[in-house]
Amino acid sequence: MIAIGPLEPADRARWQELFEGYNTFYERTLPAETYDEKWEAFQANKNIHALCARVDGTLAGITHFFKHPSTSGPDVCYLQDLFTAPEARGRGAGRALIEAVAEWARQQACCRVYWHTGEWNETARGLYDQVAEKTPFVHYRIVL
Image 1 (cartoon, rainbow, N blue to C red):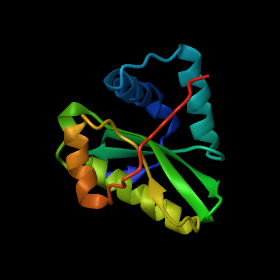
Image 2 (image 1 turned 60 degrees about the vertical axis):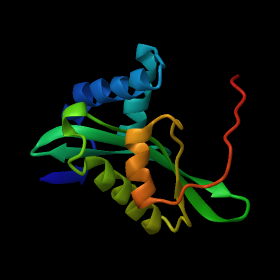
Image 3 (image 1 turned 90 degrees about the vertical axis):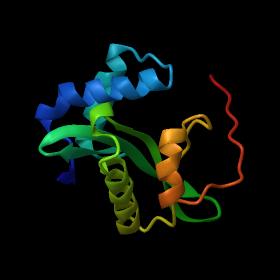
């Protein structure tokens, strides 16, 4: 059984383990203080938000997201991070997290939810192709 809900204070260590797994997957290393800072922000639940998936009672997936204005219409929701533990993949946790973020966005009067993934991330894209529309846009960035 999959249950979606907020992160609880007792989830701190497992959340960091999953978030570190996510960052390792994308070949990033974050300083310890970033994990502390983001945990506090998720607990405050004001500007950035987090949900978790529990599979049979065990924290097995996380997502981080936020709402922001759009110049062309109502606010939008950016799903920034989504990660499930390897042993939980294929059991519906990722789909359930996406659906929960979409429901949150509806309640916030957002007009859409969007996210990015690596073109090479075929496993995740298999799910994303089922639940969302792939857009033709190309992603650019300037690292500061």
